[in-house]
Length: 119
Image (cartoon, rainbow, N blue to C red; front, side, top):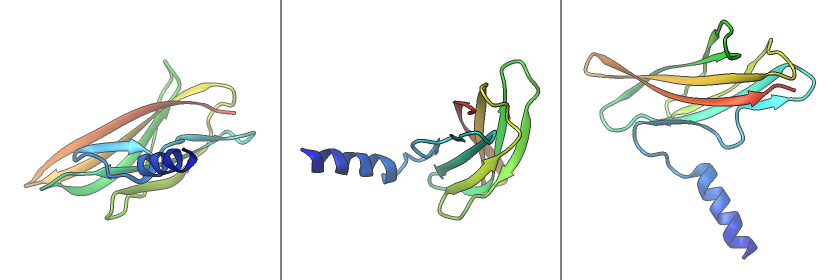
């Protein structure tokens, strides 16, 4: 039984994403205790006919001004890891991951959103 559960977890962590999907890696975004830092990691599957162009993070508290930064994106669709600094300890922050794809001169943005409590 333990081996079955382990295999299920590994498949969920490393299994393929459906085409046209972006997601945070399981367990991310991750607040680093006592630092005001959050670690972001993710992946994207652009789908057939689309090329990866860029990735960015937008982060903000509800009702507050947002901050944006570019994050690394490799040819296999791995995003990050990237540290976000300057977040308010003890507060909830929204973390938005956008990936821009291109196909035949057009751009499409994939987006996923998560919340994290900074420690």
